[in-house]
Image (cartoon, rainbow, N blue to C red):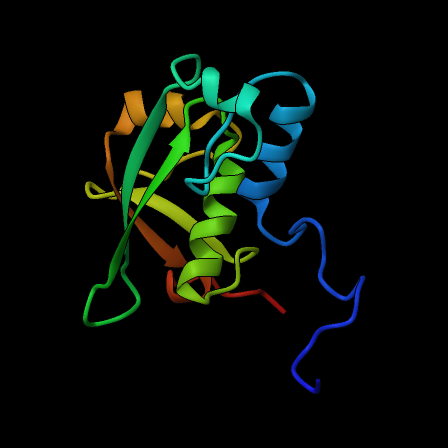
Length: 138
């Protein structure tokens, strides 16, 4: 048939999604992770209580409608992966984006999601840095 896919055309894992890469890395080390809501092995389903999750409500501040998304991620996830995934979801470049709190305090992404949750809470804002007012000096 014309609609049938050939074997080998579908990728076995998604390397573009940083949270999926983190989840795969946790599975290889023997820890259980569930970022996407799906479990693949029965052994991983048994360990559901070993890893707790945190949730973030991230709002895109550059859009006048202020759209937001809620992300549930493991506590041990690097916050850079959360930043990249949120930027990907809002279709803004991750390299030029920053996450701040509602008070305007910038968040250093080189920490775990659990630390960010404990220090700053759940409500965060994503801003593309080209809108912050940064200008290159010539």
